[in-house]
Image (cartoon, rainbow, N blue to C red; front, side, top):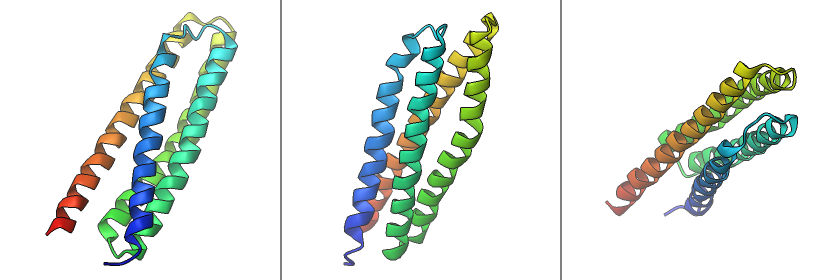
Length: 144
């Protein structure tokens, strides 16, 4: 068995921990009214940190899986890294724009911000489920 299994499993666990941590950390933030400019800035910063961390651990997993010659998993991890980058590039500017609308007193912007926040958390849950499913498939393949 290749020694590349160890970094691959490390980065896979890191992806699960990162996604789970930010999923559970983001849930309580939904109770914020988001009517204060600081609320929207904090939530946006929270997801900025998440997407940076998600990119780097998924990239590490992709490289590790490629070195381990598990190319399907390498592609899957690369897709997760790309997804984190795309969501960060699209979501954070949208959150900034809606945050400015909240500051300007737009009442409908509050609902849009809450919907965005909830959607991001739902995407995190889906991502966590995909990672866990991939780990189960990997463990079954290794046990054969």
